[in-house]
Amino acid sequence: MTSTYKHTQEKEKNQYFSPSELNMWEKSKKDKSDHKKMSDEEINTKYESGQSRILMELNREKLPSFVDALKKPDYMDLRPFFQRRPRWKPEQQSLLIESFIINLPVPSVILYEKKYNSYEVIDGQQRITALRDFYDDKLILTGLQLWPELNGRKYSNLPKEIKAGIDRRTLSSIVVITESAKTVEDAMYLKRLTFERLNTGGIELSNQEIRNCLYHGQFNDSLIELADHPIFKSAWGIPDSDLREREQNNLYKKMEDVELVLRFFALRHYENFKGTLESFMDLYMIQSLDFSKEDTAFLSDIFKETINIAYDIYGEHLFRPYILDKSKNWNWADEPYKAYYDAVMVAFSKNLSNAQILKQKKNQVIDATQQLLKADQSESFRGKGKNTKTDIQKRLNSFEQMLSQVILSN
Image (tube, rainbow, N blue to C red; front, side, top):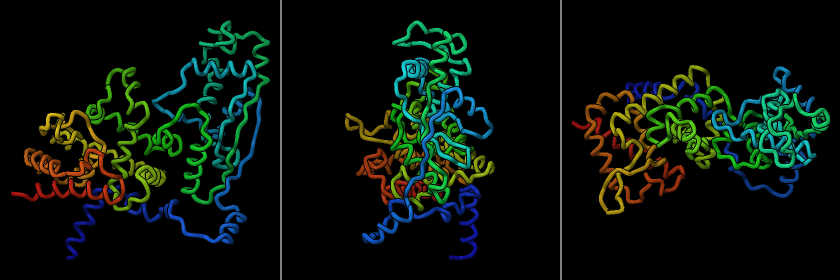
């Protein structure tokens, strides 16, 4: 390999990955699923040393004191889990308050102590937010079942005996102590594990909703912003102008649109793929916590430029593979497919420097895409293949090679 070629490769890599991405996998620890066999004696030693054991404390506090503490600077990170997908409506919040009125047991909230006397909410954000809104007089009670006489009231104008009764109630909290984890990666894994196993919110959360809770930061904000890109929303059939319709869309409602954006960023690193696709995206999110503003801006531009050039080529058929329809005729699919989306986005992102050539050879790209998909006997681009590292690499490599052949053709 000549030094000139090496220099060209390194230059292209620097244009493709953000500065922090260039060495992000060197910092990644061994995969959690990669376990060695241990003897009983080694297992006993591990247990006695306290490894993989969570340290916890239990607290109970009267509701007014708990809500007042929320006002302390840096006391509790109450950043909403669902930044644009609120799950609890006033009726649900009101029923929580009614539970306190009738002294019905309310599940404990689960907190993670990120530093001494400073907490992140792992589970219970909706309950905490409802209590805060109630004591801040922002919640108007509605839909009460046992106390309908109180519908339309706020905390400030409740009868004094009712207020006194609520103020005597307590909220329990389970705190995961920060010493339970030795590294940032261990802490993130611990928080996710705790959240998944102890979640008591009554609503099953998607993987991306959990990530949105655990790995929030500027990069996560960027994912949500990019999922609002007009071309992206149109391609995935997410309503643009009508918020009510958008909230009924399954992709939007479960934050799977945001997960699709994350898939793109993570699978650009498919050479470093480990575990399952879900765990690999988790690992990417953990690494993203170290991204700078420059990294995030760089990646945002990569996504926008990529989806723009892909749309310039495929138009209304963007992310819709060429398939045999029910009549056994070859046509563009009526809906987008995630596996095909992965291949298109990753391949085009690696060829942004060739964007003008691809636009000039638009018809050749379309013809080559059709031929590639016709030859896909396993229908892997429709998600019927597996998502192992080998299958993902094969799928993405074949699409990249197809584009390269078109670019180099006369």
